[in-house]
Image 1 (cartoon, rainbow, N blue to C red):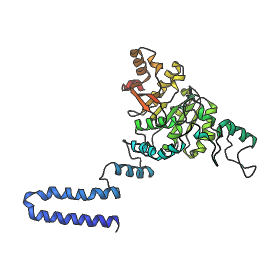
Image 2 (image 1 turned 180 degrees about the vertical axis):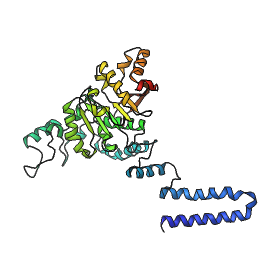
Image 3 (image 1 turned 120 degrees about the vertical axis):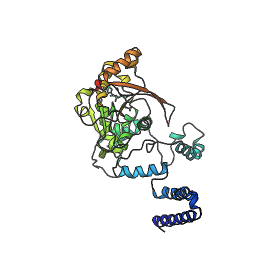
Length: 351
Ligand SMILES: C[S@@+](CC[C@H](N)C(=O)[O-])C[C@H]1O[C@@H](n2cnc3c(N)ncnc32)[C@H](O)[C@@H]1O
């Protein structure tokens, strides 16, 4: 029996019960109250299966995924797909339990050679890549579309920032959740480096909705030659610009405003004067009222001044401080602090 037939049957059964009640107690108005309730109770379990807009979160997620895939741009404020829930974390702990027992018994277990498993350091891999001009076991002369330097193939660039590469995912999850990020949003990262964080945004967002200004050419080369192709994201066409002054990046100064701008571990490395120059340009490029600028680690460019002066300079730059949040890492012992800003309410300053 099809879903629509089943619903029609239950619906007509519900109508029958209602008619019975109506005739017997018509003067009591009871049926008028009971029947809609009865029908509702019958339809809720069905709606979960058929995605009718009657149930709660289950429906919303399915319906919105459907709409997103059709490009209908439905708002999902409560959840960002792919961000682990407490039950996901519980699940992975359960899965790994038997493995933990098997590898316990020596700190070297992870890197010990086993049959078919031949752990090597990046350096050793790089030596082999150079010696054998690649890693093909079968034929010489294979031709790749994007010739990637050995240093990138052994992922040296995953260690550029001192922090674990996996921390990029933490940053994405924090910001995406804080913003109720939508694939249609436009996101700008100042100093995206090798895309440790940006990669996750690029994957999530619609094509051409991720932008970056990065001053280090080698980092951008790693992003373009290794990270995008290796993650199957070339089709997302992010705009990654080489430069260190936002005012020179005309592609970022025009067009629709950004829903999110973030600087992950960047402003603390910049001279204060450069940060002030950057934020006053950014303020004009934030969508109003929901657009946000998030800055990680600290905002010493501002707090080095007195708080009154700091607020006044922010205001002159067209920004308003919203607050501070802390984000806990999923994979390792690490807390990251984030400072949130929006456009200042005083619209006179925004011109
Ligand atoms: C510590 S790394 C962080 C990279 C990336 N945001 C992340 O979290 O993985 C800092 C990055 O900021 C870039 N950077 C520093 N000053 C910059 C500037 N004025 N304009 C653009 N990028 C800058 C550096 O080249 C470097 O790639």
